[in-house]
Image (cartoon, rainbow, N blue to C red; front, side):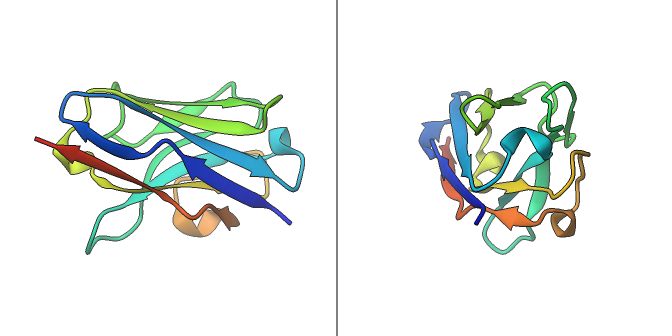
Length: 124
């Protein structure tokens, strides 16, 4: 059974940084693309960043480019999202997700497994 457990969320001032982690278990981690999504109150879940199974390639939403970095440690079965220069509009619950294939995707429906989410709140 695949399990994804996020951690690292919290309250941070605008301009600050956070690093989210997602610990994966239940299957061969390096075989599958992973992604980060977020959902703000009253809004749909939206794509933030994705990374291939090998970690050699990544893709970002426009809102994340230049500020966020997705990475993975396949020896530790862990996915990361380094978030810098945080803005109030980054406030949301952040979810990690796993695909069933190695290629990246940006749609919610393309991901088979989801974590429970971690809250990120950015104050002004």
